[in-house]
Amino acid sequence: MKNMKTYKYLFLLLLSISIVGCSDLEEHPVGILSPEGFFSTVDDIQIAVDASLTHAINEEIWGRKLSIALMLRSDMVNLQSTQTRRVEMDTHSITGDNEMVYDPWIRIYLGIAAANNAIAGADDVTADETIKNPVIAQAYFARAFYYFHLVRLFGDIPYLDAPVEGDAAYSINLTPESEVYDNIISDLEFAKTWLPNTVASRAIPSKAAASSYLALVYLTRAGTSDNTYFQKAFDEAKEVIDNKETYELDLDPDFQTLFNADKIDASLEPIFALDYNAVEADDNSYDQICPMTGVSGDEDDGGWSVAVPTMAVYESFEAGDYRRDVSFQTEATIKGALVDYTNFTISGNGSAANQPYIAKYTRYPGQYARGNKRATSHNYSMIRYAEVLLIAAEAGVEIGSPLAVDYINEVRGRARNGGQSTSGGYTEQAFPSSTIPADLTSVTVADVLEERRLELAFECKRWYDIKRRQLGDQVFGASGYEGAKPDWNSAVDYDTPIPNDEIDRNSNLTN
Image 1: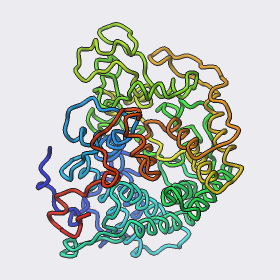
Image 2 (image 1 turned 120 degrees about the vertical axis):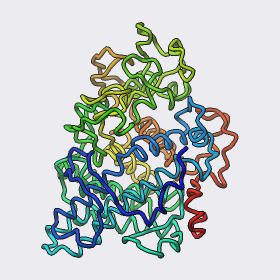
Image 3 (image 1 turned 60 degrees about the horizontal axis):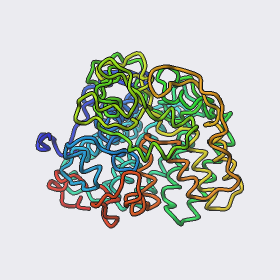
Image 4 (image 1 turned 30 degrees about the horizontal axis):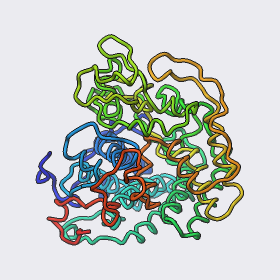
């Protein structure tokens, strides 16, 4: 575990950024980025925006620290590791000294700092608002994106909407969760107003991205009972659905394409993505999800067997549902032999498990895969069109809309298409269309939550669903997919503890 004393206090950090990652963002080496004296053109604002979004692909956020933490905290991924920081995530015994807490916390606030610098620096740029505001809107979107993760993780947090300097950093207070949500909504509304309908890359925020996140924010705020927010979630999601041609959105015909690094850029389904493509990085540049979910000893993956679903999770997918074939790896080449998941332990690796593994990230990693696939070409969809349909379905059930069943059946219908994938291992084949899953004739909230669990499996959504719907006592009990988690305590475990090192420097941050 790294020594937190090596970090300067978070809010006193100068923003030192080198943009080397996102292929569809402008690449500029930037030293010390500060509003004073840097911003003179709209392009300068764009540099700061790109810097903000680049933080998200860092190992400390979606590289693996936050993404794997979200998987482990859910009820769908078991831990095959004894490392304390991961055990805490899996068992819900998380401490403020856990690096899977403080690394994402610090990195997210760096992303927010860059967004704040872009917004503040824009005041120094003289340009017509029709030219300047669409770029500023990207910064508002980025800030909302980061704060939405933080507030769902921690609850009350420090909310900063401008650069912070000097002694003021030592007296920052926590902002109530409800106020943070109000600010997120305000940022997304500004972004929706000024962002374009379509963009060159889904790694660039669009009007549809802002609207889709607004729908998800409203759904989250509704919790289990607020019909006002359910109505807002439904209306916002329906606006995206009704204008999918304008926004150039749709379900991809082949579910596998969403997890194929060589094909994803041509898909209409991603709405906002983190883009790692076209970066010929060294083995450790991004340290992505692939090796964490790969099979130990697999001569193709060289995985680490860290985050692995239980058999109960695999069996919870209906046989014949194409999404099961896409989501799970059931074969591997180990010691020169092609074996199925009942023999994965022949690798001799102590972390190996005889059960199906996650295949969404390991199967088609793209041309830059190397070094246990730590450097891959994957684009990670942060929100995609299928989720917007399911937001509309869930909110629709709550407000009594007859459209809810149509929206969920549209998602299920795509799963019936089949497509081009592998048989759980390496032999690519055509999966024909099927009758599974069948259309529903009526729909409940439980139906939609189950559909989200299957459709969005291992995409780091499930923990947030468990929290917003207060499902912990149910899913972490003896009948849960991972069995009983005795350390689970619903009174305290829905919120993540703020890093101890931050509290030591500023007692106002005690949550």
